[in-house]
Length: 400
Picture 1 (spheres, rainbow, N blue to C red):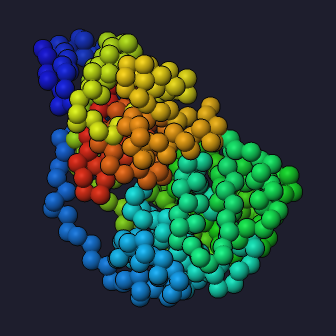
Picture 2: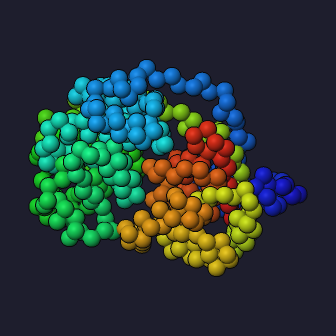
Picture 3: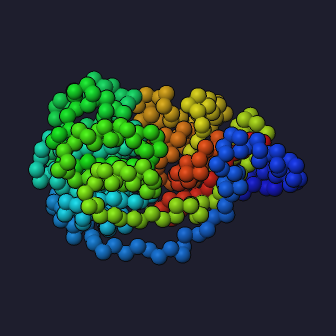
């Protein structure tokens, strides 16, 4: 029996029980925690959600007039829920736990209080931000430069895959804030280049993702270099066991703010396509991507080699695509991401490094060329589409 997929093409599903049992057994051996049926969902409109009414404006916050003018110039009119609820206690000097999805404005929620503190007392090396990926760290650095414009505050971006000699030189010049990934930060501490005793604000962004990626030991090692007399912000999409442990160890009487919504992504139209093999997957998505509705697409693959090979194959089929994975240098990843964000190229093929933290507007479709190992990874992948009240679609390709 053939069913027409909502994404075009024939989505063939067999209903005889023996085949279904064999298929489930085969598929579960590859990904035991996720059954393909969890990737199917008819979108539910977001129209029923009650719009959030902030209790503050940016002018109400006790931040410098220069920062308020910058926000006004950038077009920021009213705070998002996470900004509205977490900035006031942060400005009072409290530790803050912020539970929020990506794309909710959480970067500004921790950067604005930090900038206010740095502008008041311009001590060097007085703030540290940890992020799980190079791309997210770079995005935070860009936001810091944007929000702190004209206030003579300087940042250094410290991530793997980039020239460590240049980063060492920048640190020696004395930035006010260091933004980086745990591995490179720890490396520079061990080289005796980076000293953190003067840090007064410690920020963990996407804490659950850092823990998932195995950075718990590095984070604890870095935290041990910090003064206990500091302010700590921890932002996360979920409160996992590891995050709870870190919060308990690192924070002092924190204020907890939660604005997590739509964690199941029910508003995203989700479907599966049963392919014979990998070549069938490539043929199928090649035809799909030629359709007009596929305006801006992220395709997720499992391996670095597979992601690069798929991007090259699509480009040869007159479907220009960029690839982001761990074998790319930092400058290559930056150029690829910029090209995709600016819509110079409308297809990005990526490993899970791009699944969390990045703010990429107007993604029309997410395609899982390789199904994720864990359902949480699936949620974070498809969360790249259907943002800011817009429609989104996700398609997962499953091999029989």
